[in-house]
Length: 316
Ligand code: 6CS
Image (cartoon, rainbow, N blue to C red; front, side, top):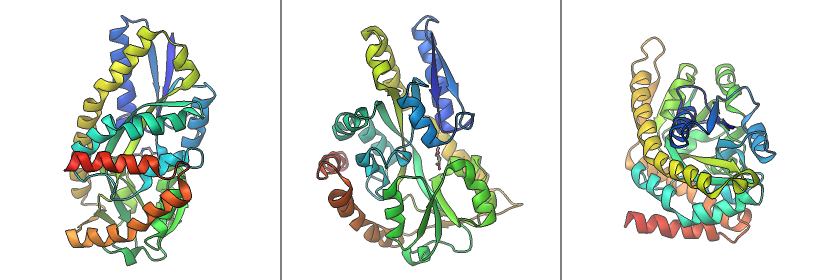
């Protein structure tokens, strides 16, 4: 049997490499009985199309970004909140791995839509790139044309700084930046570098205002019909992959920082923020949490509040 495993990234990038490594491990564990075919982004439509594909069983597995499911699973937009997770990425990964708020409560919300998240993991800290304006204080975002993923709370987070968000698929982003349809975007460094966004951007601000979270997901009905032995094999592999993918994103983010720094033919100015400068963004971002609890959450903010307790416990 062959399982189709779709990702939102292309060969070499973290999500695709994750799926390829996952496939390899499952092949070994099953003695060649389970074949998984990883799919690069592009051939199966936009990120949102891929969500539908998983839901209707067109693919069995997907790496999915909550940033594209906000119009469906409102609670999943918790990941759109800036400065929520700790700056230390290993601690963040541990929280993503062990959080009951996420792995039990949030996952149940996704299951209502036929999507079972098996794990949450980080692709690294996100940074801002921009043209026209070097971003080092919230007012730099005033009237700034910011590309975002499609979850409404991501837009809300940038409106809190005064920006004008435009949601779009990443496949359109390079051209949009090049033409000035949008002036900037957020992503982990490996993705900025590998997608060459820095070539059409003047500045990269090392803001680490959030981390990029991805989910390993399966079609709920399909997964529930697998034998317990096979489910165990999948879950075991999912667990092993948490450390693997942490190392992978770390290596890629470090490597591409050098690539961007050394791009002499098309230099990108790198802006480091002081603690005070980051604090100014943090202050502006705070009210978005209340907005999430009061206007977005369908469970009175219970998932965010529980997650916050878990974050506090992990950072004490
Ligand atoms: O910016 C985006 O939309 C894309 N960024 C990453 C890191 N992965 C896939 C996603 O679609």
